[in-house]
Image 1: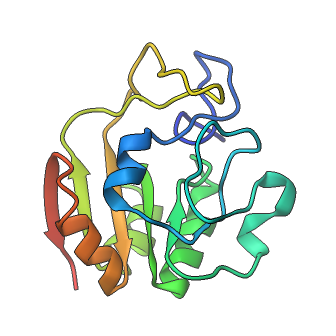
Image 2 (image 1 turned 90 degrees about the horizontal axis):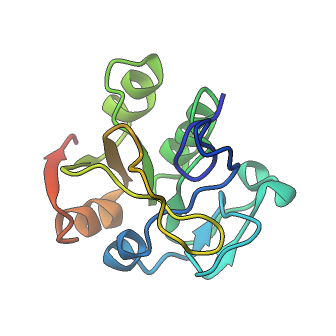
Length: 162
């Protein structure tokens, strides 16, 4: 169910993998992170919800950062992001999946396909020895998110969808 990202790598046997801090710095600041790790060496937003808080069902405020649990669970988070329409999600660039077709191609404002594979970090802040093993994409929902993606300086291909 889970894959590396914010959450799990079968190879590394870790439940939580953190977004590289430079991604957060280039896209932020963020008001809410509903998928924050329980233990984190750096903040990703002003307000954090962890798995213990059930961030999916909390009231989100302001501009949202969402690095959801990878796998089938991610679609629930992308649905919520599409309804909230004011934030950025980080997911694998699995463009052929039903989840991507329904909640990204049909709902997102813009995309930034990251050129290099990301290296996530463990809960102590250490960069993983191996890259994520798959390409990643930043998904913008809403006009502010679109502007931040376009102006981020992150090495990748920006695509405006709507």
